[in-house]
Length: 133
Image (cartoon, rainbow, N blue to C red; front, side, top):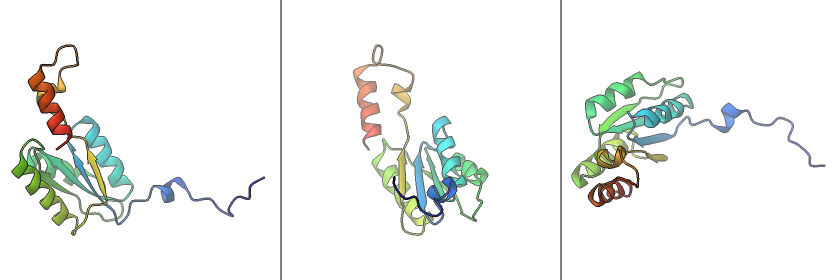
């Protein structure tokens, strides 16, 4: 029979993200906002990315900071190369020079309301470019 450690780590210890920085694209949407909250609750500094900087910052300001993390919001449109570069640079600057976690959650507006039975080739291409940006 295996020997167990004297005290196993708690769930909070296993998922402790204090001192880590995370960027979540599409961070103001349904799934993105839940992911941002979970990361913040675990102690991470969260950088929320959205096409609209004001919306991203407003949501970042609402996130919990149980360990004093300073969350931020950046404008980042994954289909626009200049926006992508500026958004990532702003995220890295906010996170004191490094990102430990990237959650690529942004979706393409064009393909979001379709499935494979009714999406056009152009919409599918845009969705693919957005997901691989």
